[in-house]
Length: 115
Image 1: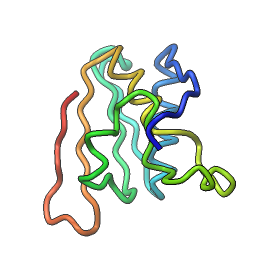
Image 2: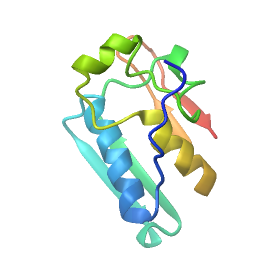
Image 3: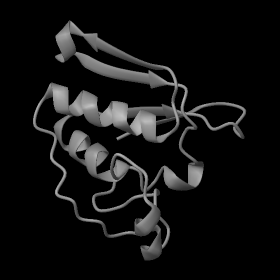
Image 4: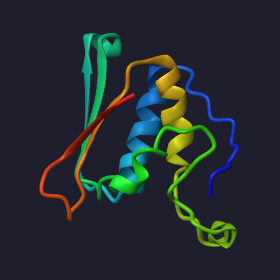
């Protein structure tokens, strides 16, 4: 699905952290660390043990109105998710320099992408 419109807007630091933690939970994380440098003004880092992002999904990860969480319209009936990753990350890209480091169980090394 390449055109989802939820109007997601990140308004403040708490909202940004909430969205990142929900992404970690959607990825199946059981351990999530939130690190704030200078109370979040210098940087916000969320580290988790979730499933990671597949290399095929990296290009779409921060595109507005895009998600890798559903593949077909009918998938909406069984959606068990906090939201559509692309919406929040797209908003964060507009507000900051975003860096994502990810590794799936199939990957030997992590991939770092800067937006």
